[in-house]
Length: 291
Image (cartoon, rainbow, N blue to C red; front, side, top):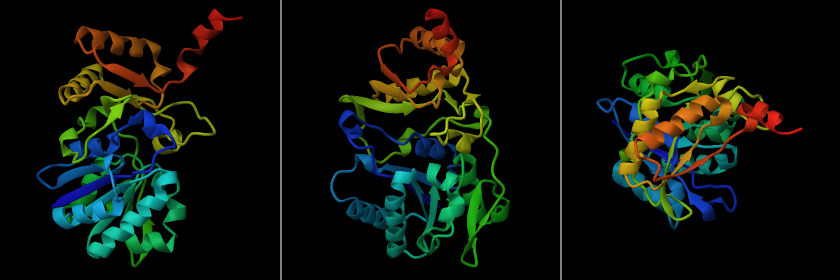
């Protein structure tokens, strides 16, 4: 069986002038699907130049996947739906899976959309590493589709929503498979770039953020040995810059310090690191420093 996973080409206006980054979630899913059951390829459409629909059409026609996966945030939903329609126009029997933040947060709404029901077969809600693998097993008759947690599937043309999947144990998540990518050209300020994570989730329930709806109010940490191994793999693949895409890496300042020490110890401090961080983990120190 063959699966082809697409990350959408849409980016925040102006962001691509500074950086072009791969979708880490897709690479992580590729690293966690049993390769004996399914070959997984990842296509980051942000790196594709020219007509996106023509490129996708050629790729699907040549690769002939059995399943196409589309990951989207809310502002990318229109693009994902257009590609779902395109995939079905190429092969009506092609299975289309929609996942990511938007299908997780708004699954009840979008599962009622007639265009979605016509072009999408499954919705993956929440983390996809375990769910997609179990869906592939269900497609191959190795388990029941109604038992796959975190999955919505069509029955008689209407979506049925299985039980939500609890946040995964970090120790159960294998390293991303960056070799599954078929696109390249990722950079931050012109330097070859990649993306890693050291944790998932955040305990702060900000009104503007959907992280707690994706992961609940959890903060799950990957062990430092795994983090260092992942940095080493990205570095050997040519990365000169790394975005640490954690939702809130400074929630545990002492751990963040240990990660930095381990980076130095392993000689990986020749890389430029970028983080998105909150002051919530260090606000007490800030309060002490100010008046």
